[in-house]
Length: 328
Image 1 (cartoon, rainbow, N blue to C red):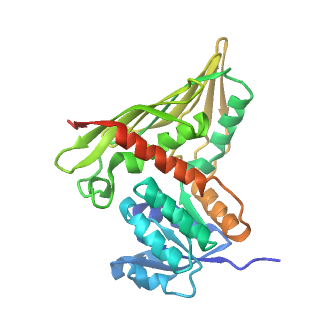
Image 2: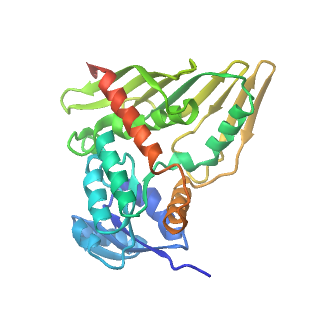
Image 3: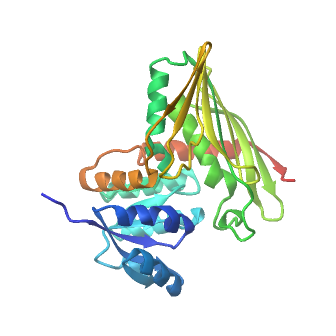
């Protein structure tokens, strides 16, 4: 029996929605985009002309619609919690861009609300759905690099235009909230959830009052360490590496590979270097499939529940331990 398409409304006309998520949504045969909302009616019309659905002026009006089963929320980070809560209280399943909320307390309240109302709440941490990471995890478990000793993870890109939301402390939240979460989640993936924040550093733009870069040193109970670097004042870099007792394995384009990219995994050992090329895949399409499977069948994906709260707590602890220095 073929299920009816999941009717999804979009709250906000962000660039990530236009470039990646909306194309993935409309390409999926199990999804129907029924409405796209913006505070600017003209912008909503522009998006619906390309992706379909009805243009809606105002987020509240979209939540009132009976032809919306679920919503996708690509708003600036510090607006997520408010509109996720409103959507859940309106009886809608929610797929939100990351981070779910600005802090662990707010994230926990949202997860509890979704569970109480038997609704799906997923964070679109798309890189977690890419098969290259499952491949690396399998190699580590099989002992290809021996016992894991340390992890390095780096995600950063050059400065954006002055009006970019990441520079607005009232909506964007800065580099740690929007960018640092990628290497932080990578550390959780390989070191486990019982991680100590040994130290952290944030570069703060004094004029804008937001962090534009930073680093953190984490440690697991077994002595494995993680050195994380992130920011929006660097040349582009998106990779991580695991260094073990007998080898090293690295992912060259870890966080934002385009759907046409064939992932290359480099494995280095004492007398042998190997590069494994994996087939291309669209991690945004993977998120859409994970969301549908969760809504319809309750299939876990790692994008929901306890994993979100562990991540949010670690971000809070990195921020709390940070030495603050003005950015140059």
